[in-house]
Length: 435
Image (cartoon, rainbow, N blue to C red; front, top):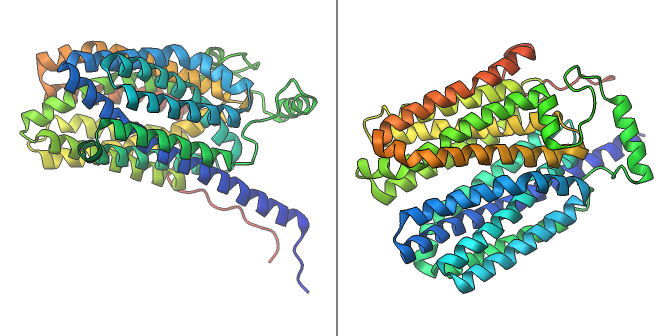
C-alpha cells in the first residue's frame, strides 16, 4: 500500500498556505489600488473645478511627493520594529477614515490637508506591505509573489483610472471618495484573514535572537557588505546591488515627471482630448499588467537583473518613440511597450531588492528607496512645466526616452558583475530522485 511521508505532506501544506496568503495580499492591493486611483482622479477634478487653477494641481502633487519623501524613511523603521500585519491593518483603517472625512468636507484646503495625511499613511503602509510579502512568499517564490502583487496593483490602478470619469459623472466626487473608503475596509479585512506571520521574530525575543544568529551563520559573506547596517540609508550605501538599482530608479523617476506633465498637452496637440488621454493611460496600464504577469512566471534568482535591464530599455524605447510618431494609434502601441517594460522591471527590481536585504531591514530599505524616488520625482516636477512649455511635448518625450536609456547603464553594470545576460524564461525544475 502506498503511503505519504509526513514531512513532504507538511511541506506541501506549508507551500499552499504561503501561496494562499500571497494571493489574499494581492487581492487586497487590487481593491485598494482601484479605489485610490479613482479617488485621485476625483480629488484632482474637485480641486480644479473649485479653483480653476492648474497651479493648485501642481502644488498638490509637489506637496504630496515631498511629504512622501520625508515620511518614508521613518515609516520604514516603523515597519521593521512593530508587527507588520497590525501596522498594515491600522493604516488601511486610518485611510478609510481619512477618505470619509474628505467626502464630507471637500473644500480645497481640506482636500489638500487630508491628502497629505493620506499620503503619510500610504508611505507607512507601502514598506511594511512589501517586506511582509517577501517574508510570506519565501526565497523560492519571491519573483512569483512580486509578480502577483504587482499584477493585482496594476489591474486595480488601471480599473480605477478607467472607471473614475464615469463614477464622478454618475455618483459625484463625494460618493467616489466614500467608495474608496470602502475599498480600504475590504483591504483591511483581507489582510486580517492572513494568519501566517508576515515578519521574522524580533531580535529582542529569545526566538528572534536565535533566528537572527542562525541566519547570520547561514548567510554567505559578501565582500561589499561586511556587516549588517542599522538603517536603510546605510544598507544602500554598503550594498552595491542596491546602490545601482536605486541610481537607475532615481534617473528614470526624474524623467517620468516630465512625461506626466507632457501627456495632457500631447493629447490636445493631437486633437484627441480627454478620450485620447484616457486611451494613453489605459494602454500604459495594460502594458504594466502584461509585464508584471509575465515577470512573475519567467523570472527567478538567476535572471532578475537581466529582467530589470530589459524592462528599463523597453520603457526607454516605448517612451522615446512616442515623440517620433505621427498619430495617436502608433503612440498607443509605444505606450503598451513602455508599460510592459515598466511591469517587467518593477517585479524584477523588487525581487532583487528583497533578496539583497535581510527581513529585519526590508521595510527600512523600501522606505529609503521610496524617499529617494520621491525626491527625484519632485525635482523633475519642479522643471517639467517649463520644459514642456519651451520645447513642446514631442521633444520632451524623446529626451525622456534618452534619459531612461542612460538610467539603464547602472543596471548594465550590475548585470555584467553578476555574470552577464541570462535568458528570460523560467528556471528548470530540479530533478527528483527515484522513479
